[in-house]
Image: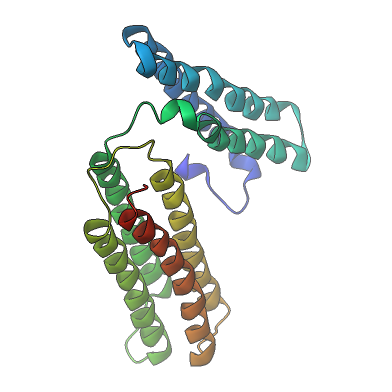
Length: 231
């Protein structure tokens, strides 16, 4: 699916759809298989996800019958349904709490990959050369920005969250979705500024301030929920 992502998405639409439908179908089938060997609330939780995930799968799959922008609207609507389904079943899923420590560990490993990819892609794109102080300074500031976000993320995850509390884990899951989106915005903005040839210090400072503020606000969500034991 990652190899199918491109600014010119049309040629890669089918391969992306096949990958997405395949992954979602396997996930739904796993829940349906698990519910056969479980009992009580665990069976209800697995059955809920196993059944209703198929709604988003079918909606996304129907996009193959459309052309132009309708095709993508149908595809993204199915993805949106997949995101909403667990929220609709929150009361059912709360009865089957997750292992918070394990969930944070999984997201932490994924975050390391994203931070590393953002750093490597940024440096590879800028490719600072000897004597070119514009690109060198741009690379240094970008490096400091990404490393500071990495430090803030893991510092808050380790010190502020109550890992012993067991809930549905949805604040962690959907909160990380926003964090990953903000990280993608930072990486995309760095690339855009570089290609536009914008080396004006003031504009870059404003850029840093805006995106770091977004990231910090998302981190405060985890801090507050960790202090109040509501994650």
